[in-house]
Length: 131
Image (cartoon, rainbow, N blue to C red; front, top):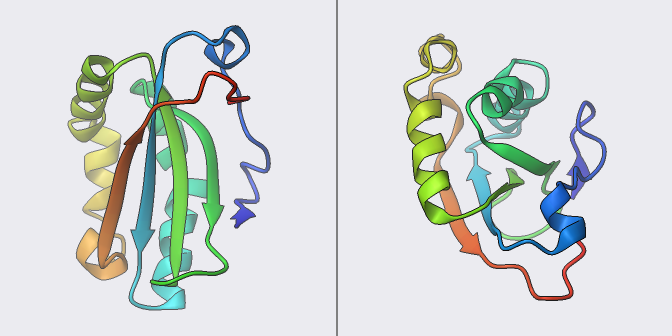
């Protein structure tokens, strides 16, 4: 994986250092071409999507372009939440955000144009997790 240029490092929350109960959401977006994949990366990295995430309660840990594996081109990111209820509430807030709705309705940026699928996993950290 290669970190996004404007998100070059892991961002750890206070929950990481205190080993507070939390969950992670690992998401991978697949694209039909390199150009489409780079467009989706741009939406996150410089197009405002990460800022919308933060404003609506989606807490990022990392964003990266996948360099190997099946299904390339793809990107993967990790979010963290205190629990599933918070995750659900914050995704609803994100999905109805006016700036997000404008971004995804922009010609050239619609899901159909730049993604072919999304893999989503909910994870729990091990007791010794550093993140």
